[in-house]
Length: 277
Image (cartoon, rainbow, N blue to C red):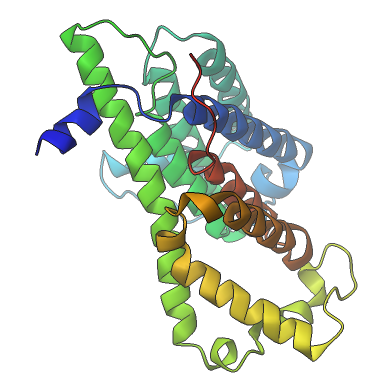
C-alpha cells in the first residue's frame, strides 16, 4: 500500500518523457489539422465522403457530435482552426491545467465523428491519448501544498494509463492474431504486402517467402511479448528500436500512417531518458 501511495504522490513520474510526448502529440495533431484544411471539401464540404444522418443521442453525448449534426459546410473550420489555437495555448500557457487539453480532445472527437468513414485504429488511439493527455501536467513544481499533491496524483494516473494502454494494444492484437490461420501459418504479412492500394511506394519490400514468414512471426511474438520484455532494462532500447522500424513499415508501406506514427510517439514513455536535474 505504501508503494502505491508513494508512486502517486511522491513526485511527477516520467516528467521528461511527458514533455516529449506532449510536444510530439501536438505536432502530430497540428499536421493532421493542416491536412484537413488542405482537403477540407473532401472531408467537410457539401459533398463530403462521409454520409450524415443526424439524430440525438442525448444531451451529454450530443456534445461529441456538434460538427456531425451541423449542416453548415463551413462549420468545420471552427473546429480545425480551434484545434490549432488551443494546441498553441496548451503548449505555451503552463499555468492553466487541463482546460486547453480537454477542449483539444473534445474538438478532435467532434472532427473524428464527422469523418468517421475515414478513421483507422490510429485515430481511435489518438482519441485515447488526447483524453489521457488532459491528466498530464505541463509544469512540475516541488512544493508540498495539497494542490500540488493532487496534481501529482492526477499526472501519475495519466502516465500509467498511457503505459497500460500501449501494452493492451499489443497484447490484444497479439491474441487476436493467434485466432487467425493466416498469422499462424505465416502468410499474413505476405498477403498484406500484396495489397498495393495502400502501399505508399507501389512496390513490394518483401521479395521472398522466407522474409515474409520471418516478419510475420516476429510481429506476432513482438506483440505478445512486449508487455513483459519492455521491463527488462538491458533489452529495452533494442526492443523499442525494432518496434520503431516495425511501425515505420506499417506507416509507409502498409499505408496506416496515423497508426504507425502515433504508436511511435507513445514509445516516448518507455524510452529511458535521463532525468533532468
